[in-house]
Length: 318
Image (cartoon, rainbow, N blue to C red; front, top):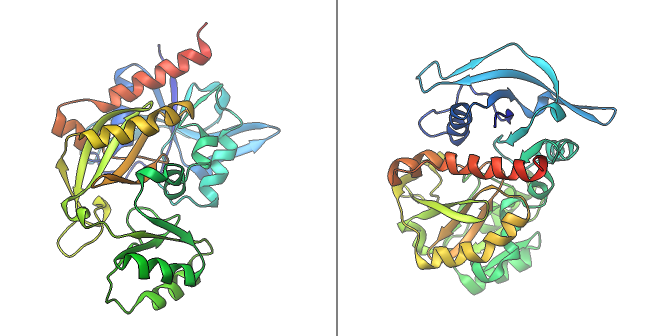
């Protein structure tokens, strides 16, 4: 099976070839004989009911400074391609949402991974609320009185923007911290959306585990340990990746959410687990493949492509 694959992502010139998950997905696609194209979300157009993208043929190589060879741009009707990998980084803003609406015009004739409608309906910090028994105590609101009451109950809290990403705008408010009101004033100026407030989990000091699920089943895990003096474990802000195993509780969480992910066409998902609770379900552009590959001597990108090809075959092969 040779497929024509477009990767919708940010510029390829600046990616970290030792850590980028889209890069190894592209390498594995090439190994299987698939042809690659690259475009950015702003290259999408909808005209007369058809979706086009100004694409450039792409060839990846694991060579520092020469990892991406791009051809000339051409306007391509996305229904003439087989697969689109939706891999641009958040934030999950109106630009991101618009891209899902456009890609919905071609899916599933052109298989979009992950399903664009389901991605639109599953922002990380909201999708997880459909599994309240697996979460820490959480409040989503604009109401300052509710936030104050939540803090009075749980004392030690985390405050963060509802549609933030990469650990940006995440604040740990300790019981004796006097800055909550000022912080809420800033959030009100910066964001129109509600704020998310959660009970602080001391277990984060031992790490925030990223678990990769492929077509609803757990495939591997990576622990991200916060830097000294940090409450955030995201690698974007200095978190240290460590080898991690799946615990019985991790498997219990995956078993609870896996069937829903599979039914929604979520082939590649990353969930975040601190201690014994799940804090986020990442369906937009999950990361962590290369780190887990190295720690566990596996090839998760091959397992993802197995799942993509199987799903493509279900739609196109009789």
